Length: 81
Image 1: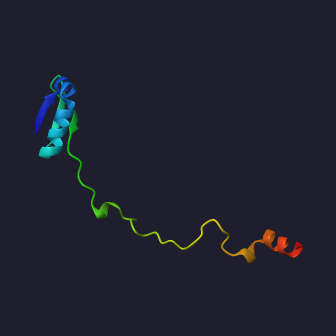
Image 2: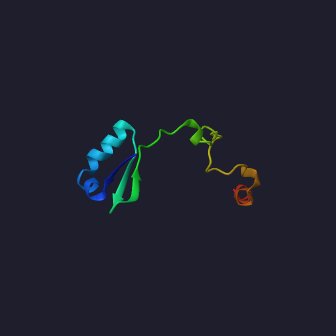
Image 3: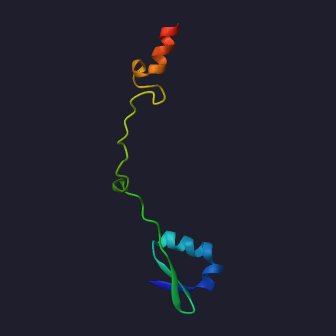
């Protein structure tokens, strides 16, 4: 794995990031010879990483009461009319 000093990374950041993306390689950033960070390409998301995808089913209006006759307030309003 390639390593570069933080000063070089700071000066050439965008070019280094493009190289990581294009060549799919990892680079370790060092400060005074000690590793402080690692730059690596992002792995593409797989279908397995979204376990709840496509599990929601649209059942209708979620704002209206489920059973109007069960609401006492609405029953009282109907009786007053």
